[in-house]
Amino acid sequence: MRNTKIVLIIVLWAALLGTVAYVRLTQDDSGPKDYVVRMTNDMTFDPHTLTIRPGDTVTWKNVSKELVHSVTTDANKVRNPNLVLLPVGAEAWDSGLLQPGESWSYTFQIPGTYHYVCVPHELVGMVGEIIVNNDE
Image 1 (spheres, rainbow, N blue to C red):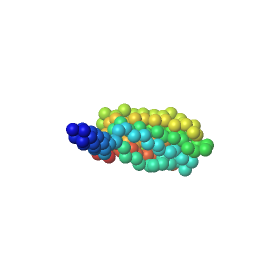
Image 2 (image 1 turned 180 degrees about the vertical axis):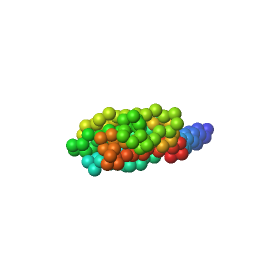
Image 3 (image 1 turned 30 degrees about the vertical axis):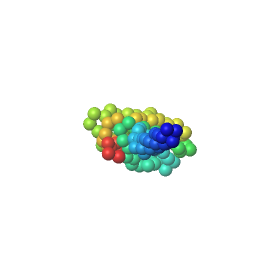
Image 4 (image 1 turned 90 degrees about the vertical axis):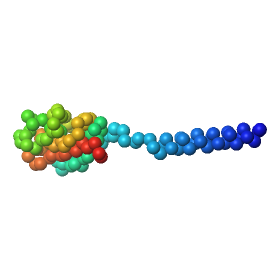
């Protein structure tokens, strides 16, 4: 009888450990993520293109030492409105001017392609792209 109890305890313990291991292996690790796009002294967004999922947040960080940057999809704030692009249903956003060391974040909910511009450096081609993809 005592040996039966010990065997039963061992079997139950092994079953519990197996369940815990299975849960850890099958947990969905695809929750929202945070990304950083650097705004540089070279008047570029780094990375230029970023592919993310709905619910992910992108933070643009001005890592330049002297330059003021911005990030906008607002066609009314740029000289060439053809440079910005929003998916259907998405609203334009604008960081305003970011001094060196400052940052600004946006959480993307609507899938599609977003083209954005640094207003002070639009004429030198400081543009970037975010692709929000359900399948990423």
